[in-house]
Figure (cartoon, rainbow, N blue to C red):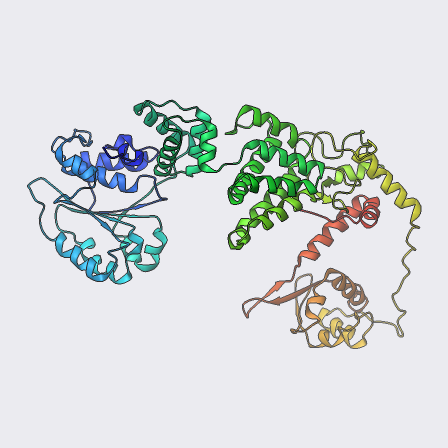
Length: 585
């Protein structure tokens, strides 16, 4: 006797058996019970979530002679059995649009739909799978019959890419009732797999089923197919090791080992770890996807130690212990660096994924630790910094921070709650940072006081009440005009505002320079004597050929933030310059 796959053997026969899609199955069941079934449906959603199954159950319910009053088909009569198995039926036709996508196929379908059902009380149902493969001409051929369908004829279109139908034949969407199917959750898949194994008289641990459910990525059919593979390998037994062998999953212990390598900065161990994975036959792409998940779990644990995670207790304990050596900002940057590898397509384009994987892990191991401004100011002599603390107070991530100058140097304190790492002498990050700042203050002489550079006017300046007049006189005089900008200021378009002037320079090599905060400040100071008051100057750029919009660069915003911080804590500027710190978000 031939083996029947679990995905076919345990396919639902009623609306109630379809997992997770209650918003669709319950609506269709009530429509059948109340005789309010539409003439055209569009089922959208990922593969393996029940689109074609629900289309068959709907056809079964409409043509079942023993249908219940609630709208459920019996599932055992001859009509239900033929429809459920996908066999030839006079009134239920399944069409694969991938191989019947032309206008001639659509015209043939339209002509067949004009014939009445085979018997009184029955309904003709046309199930069109992969509907997005139909051409624009085929949709146009079906447009009229979908708008005015014959009696007792129903169309069900199933697709994984509804946006293609929107692009090819937007009017079709208004003639169909659309249902969007959801991905099936891990717990729902585990519950369904447990029921299937119960009918198969097989016992399996929950951890093994959860591994299968996560790999299925929301698809019940994929989960049943993977379970079939595991049963074929083991001859009827299911355990976590066999699931990992079939799916090529990397053990969580390998990721815990990787976290140890990163926090201890054992850069050479990265190559050894990747080599072991390759020698043992693991798929590095699968390892990468597991790395994304473990970093996400680590970040959740760092933000909330009692977060509910889908991970074994022993692995959770190991992660909880190690994430305390990383600040939330560090884990966010690690997760961002890992996700960029996939979004930029570097892993997919590379014929050998080993190199990009090794470079990613090395970047993580060399990643600078962050230090919060609170810890930095405390180390500079502000509020006392207890030994062993290098970050923000316990209870949340730092409000702002800066990566320390060296990649992996001992002068970098680690932000975030918990104890900061110590250097080779056993000193805390706060002690090391404080000593570095004091040493820099002793060795580097203070900068000389800035001298006044404003030139003495050759003749008395008479201020003008008109800002435009004062602007012209200032530009013509050339007093205090930044070097190299005289020509651009003379040809610039100037418009008065409520509290100043808006300047629109001509396009050229100096237009970007005029927008910097330093140049705008210099122009404001030089213009003030000519108008008798301080004006607000805004350097703008064209916006869609009309109007003006202020030019605000990322550098300007960063400089303004630093200036505000310097005013609050003057010693901070000294630390930024001496320790080569950089402002982060």
